[in-house]
Image (tube, rainbow, N blue to C red; front, side):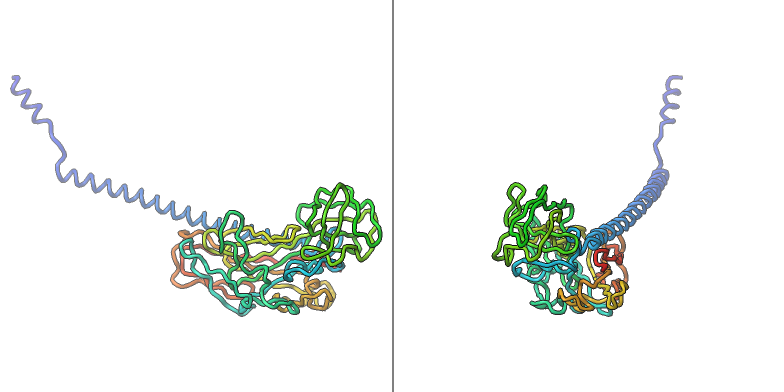
Length: 394
């Protein structure tokens, strides 16, 4: 009896057969493959969605930066550049001190509507090449020297970075905006004499020695250099740049006139931290030297057209490239002070790995200019805006 029971128990203990084991492994592989497929599809969908969102955010942010600046173009305290005088000494180059006009720009050679160019394949390992050839840009008619302004060649890298980061990339237009310094509070004149070289203000918190500023009574204004601010007294000086050609104001101002620091901001496509193009701002910040800052990464191309009121009717007669606009305070029909709107087009890109490389290099139209992008795994989109210049109405 005992032997029979032990034999029965031993007979009941058995493992998987080879066939059963192979079936189980096959089923496990099928389930794992299905789970992995779902995971990869979800991951690819997430990358595509996040990449598209990043492109949309980057393009929108870039346009917002430029558009907000353009809406302030030409604003000089309570006056505009159309009625502004200057006592600034000659600047090192034109872009520093053209405060008699609201805008300035430089047209990348060969990129006018109907032109074409390629965006280089770029990465941290092989960054886009910067361009130090002034002749690769066309300056406004009458600008001396011709070509890209010397201040924009070999731009110093942003704080904490090394060259050539921040330097300009070829084939992209450059836009310069002149206005009062963003966020500055006006000071109000409390005492001033005709032809003054000093005057007093109520609160000089926004003013400082070594600063470019404008004084305005809303009918006229003068852009000047402040040599010092002591207590509530503002003192002008004369000498080299940044300085004044004379230490006295050429016209009279009344008590209550406004004084504000002024700024020149240059928007351009420069070498970004990831080796690709990025939207940069070069700010004078009311001083005598420009500082560069990267605003939005992965902005690969920029084209600009200027809507000029050629008939004096506050309507755009034609859209011109920067080299077709006249750089002069004489205000002829195609002066920058007759520009009443600006068209901006940007090509924004995602980080690599968002889409599958296309079969052929994709092309995009930026204000009539054909831009060919490389065959890579970045998603791209064109963003355009037309901005009216509210401070240049007569």
